[in-house]
Image (tube, rainbow over all chains, first blue to last red; front, top):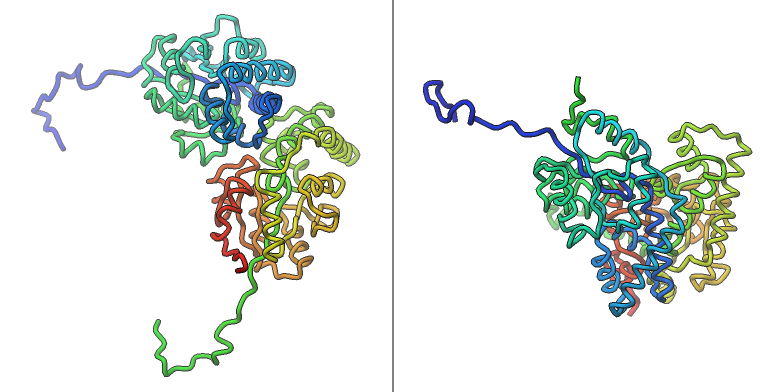
Length: 242
Length: 242
């Protein structure tokens, strides 16, 4: 449709309103720190202490989703029934086993530099993780971040991923609308939660998912790891101030 | 094109020759036994003893390929230079670290039953692994298989996967042509080696690769694990004798 110049359809000021520049909401495990495989091993050890034998790849594929959904999914696959107390014990055992391996967890390449650059460029960003505060807090130190870094953990919302609550809360914390945020995550659960939050999803391969799977789950772009994302951040429309 | 019944294009006997029923060539780690993540952890520990820090997912993605290519790839990614002696030491350290975790390795669901069924149905099958004999032999016991199970290990061929040598040698051992064999593997290296051998590739997700990635690498079908394959083995044209 062409509108002739004589037809004032709207007042010039209302033609469109400028959107704010994008903010970035980061998943933690597999996105900023290299901890996915330690979580896998910790879940396997915890399950085996309860006498549950489960193929390791099936555990890997559920990392990053809510602990409740995780356990429910495992139980369906194994046919095992757990009481509420046993489920709680399983989660406690996982936390213990993960803590025991914490000293082998490293930041992913480029994650420190990426977050420092965003801060320098005044791009708002936050962390949103399905992990509990006790498990997630030590990562701040690892990433060289202050204690007051904007971070939403499992205990601050009603439902974890793939529900959108964590990202909605993180956007609220930054005082931005979720549709102006990009979610950066390594798992299909992050990307599903991003779509449900109305945010744009961006995938990283650093958690072990392949590019195709992340794209099919809705990732607009897929990068190898934070270093690769930082290197090509113009592709996300993030502008460095002159 | 239609050939009228009056046109004897070939003699009836030459019209086509019957092909033998398919034989199955199995990868080992991630295909028959749940050992991929233990290999990943063992490589990570070995690398870290040589002062090399590498993201775990990058190690995972190279599991199943030849040790030489594996190390060459890692070195390119990290920019580290290793002497021949250091490379050898890295491989020895990996073997040690893997051996230390061997008691946590389990058969994948359905692998024993699948191999027993093939034997009962007189379908020829063999194992072809990029692993050395010392690392692979203990798996036979785990799978309840006799010592004389047809198996080709790294030390029996010039090049491991993704070169086709392991599968070519396994087909030769069974006295079949590679084009009448199906290769069952969990990694893109198995599927590349299968194509180069002229065999049909079938993927299993039990090593941690996603369905899409295995399909793109050339898998004719993708199953979750050996149990899933056994359950739908008619899809591969494997017939159970009446």
